Length: 144
Image 1 (tube, rainbow, N blue to C red):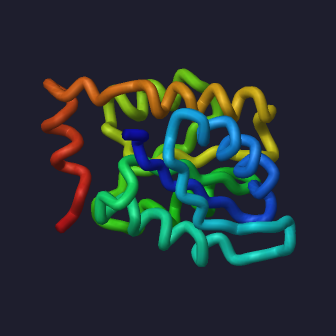
Image 2 (image 1 turned 45 degrees about the vertical axis):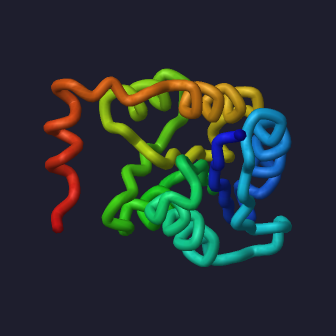
């Protein structure tokens, strides 16, 4: 059974979303929350449903892409059970999983190559949370 992954983007991240989705679809069941073109859109319309699907365990992890990675990350992190890390290099994705138990990442399409986006996604999806001393810290993140 394939692991279920959510993916979403705005218009600036659409092309990268399609590339990452197509690459990952061989190994994962990827649920695409949009957008579905390069037409200008409001990223929260796509991020909230993707984040909700991770929060409700419909998808195990999620990947978000926009121009800077910031808007989608900020939006996802409004969800109580989401820990979304902005990743611009593979090493950040590894540490986000190992130390922060990140369940979503965001990527900045305007600042990384398509190859790096794929590598970031691979590292994020293949790295496990270390737990241990990090668990106590993660437990203190949520406010409520």
